[in-house]
Image 1 (cartoon, rainbow, N blue to C red):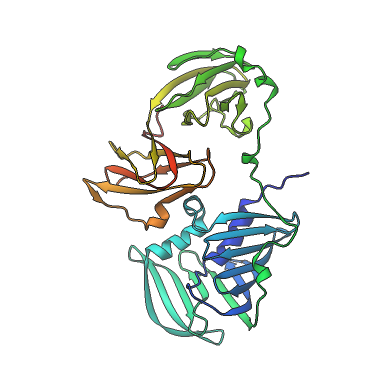
Image 2: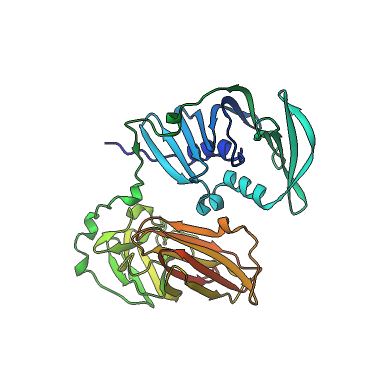
Length: 406
């Protein structure tokens, strides 16, 4: 059966219109309406259905019919791809989405900025309270909230010309609860990263290949393999230089029990011109070795261990890391609990909490045992990172370095 990989563009486009509505808790009206999302010359039309804390938007993107269902109480968003009869589940406030999705970042600005009521206006026949949202003294968003329905009927983004979301043609009436569940017969999408990776032919007999412990340098030719042991408290840094005019392809691939953790082609080519190095921070429960394999060309390889602080922390415990420079801090969270694990990241300056973001944007949740979350933090305003485990048990691995140096 063909496996469909959800398009990031489709997901972002779908979630944005719903998320920017930011419906107030306790809103109990039921209706269907037309939604217009305009960005410059591009106009996207969709239908939105609302019932209590549930929202559903039906749209078409790139020829695909998509539905987005948001359960505000559960903090869960479902993106349904009807052509494949599949759906994806995403946490509505997932920190990773907030850091990497510019549209979710717009919600972050609203939560962290100052919202000021500036008056009342009529939008499409509805009396509305107008709010201006600003950050650092700069106005970034206008929002018109219907006095009748207690939700925004128009949101205007001031940082981009002619960019807004607007709701029109509201039709009140009962809404069937079944609209807020995936249709019968639809299956949950499985991330290919959760499926076992096939062992490539070149890795079928790794036990016969040499094991080398960093630091070392070695000239490697196409098809050659070197295995580097993964150890606690260390990252493995590898760089490669090729003298071949056509370049070279070499990858540092994490293996566990003789099988790659993910498809080898997903790993970066550390021999590519301009690449500083590849940095592998897997913990021993995730990988037992990093396998260097040269796919093409001749490569001069340099490898070394880089020390990182690594601890296993249970719920109620804390992990502390002192920052020694203004460089970014590289962090890896690994869930070692049978159930989900969760932590909150805070930044301190001389013992005083100087965290600027709300707690929900500094909370990291990993649902499955053995899964990880890799994050980079800027600690310019502090000199210590404190991570408190609020649920489950995690391995936390943290280090600080200049990303432009090897």
